[in-house]
Image 1 (tube, rainbow, N blue to C red):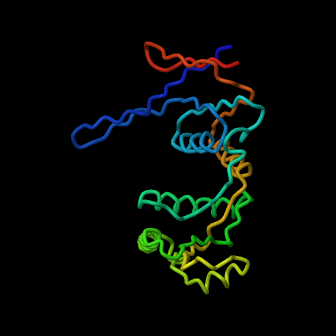
Image 2 (cartoon, one colour):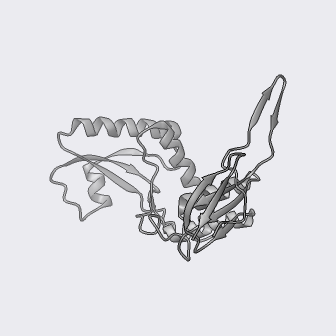
Image 3 (cartoon, rainbow, N blue to C red):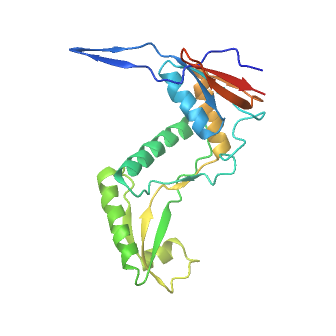
Length: 216
């Protein structure tokens, strides 16, 4: 069957005219897949006035890759851009946890170990600590810790070959299913429509713009 709706996958056009900006009215869009990426996109687009229809091939959300994800939540990142993204994401997750239980465990923190003689790993750790000082929440400072501090935090760890480590407080984990459904609830509250048991078989562009989506 063909979904009886016309979708435009093009973002609203912004025309630059001297001294003013003219923005076209938001259009509708179709999102394929009901994992965390699909529902998060649905929420953000709906928040900006775009008509959203999400299509999920199974009978419930979070049935694919999101379902069996580890759900690790960290502020550790390899670049300034990713670091900013992680910090902002953690702030959003904490806000969601406070208003709706999404299974966020946020008080355990993490230790990244540096073995004796691994100079490259040590330099990487110093770079991470420096980047955290620039971009991270100052309430939860990332810092280098000694082997004695590691042993105190984790008494069961074998310290024979450990030199030092990087401690990132408030790293933790989250329940992917609870998170996905909480974001989906926000999206639907903003007007997004989510259709289950709607496997997409074909997407065909229309010559005049927009697409036809065929679902099973």
